[in-house]
Image (cartoon, rainbow, N blue to C red):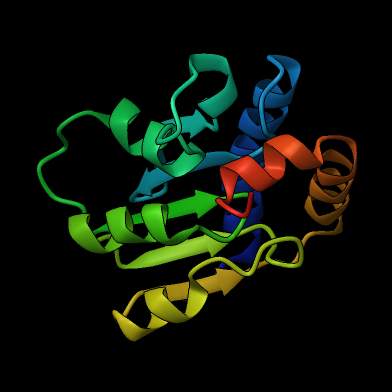
Length: 151
């Protein structure tokens, strides 16, 4: 099977829409989507601020929204930002073999951990997402630092 950047960009747009939804709700603009056989089976966004829940990161919200799907070995998780260790742990726990990321300039996250665990990581390095997170972090450093645990 040939690699399809067009497919990654199509699905990443769903995650971007989720990130924008979070921002419109007053939350951190991070979104995620879970795909099986090219079909989006779940999506979610960071809801930590909205739900007053420190664990409700975009990837966790997405996986939770997918419900009990039985197996994850044939899925791909898309996230607008490199997953943190919490979310990377969920990827490893559920056996998701591949993560496609929108950017890691603003947050290096747990890329090395994911790779050490045999997870394929594709970083699209999208300027739109780099700018969105840079602007959010600049405008809300207190919320950003709380979310990534650097207070």
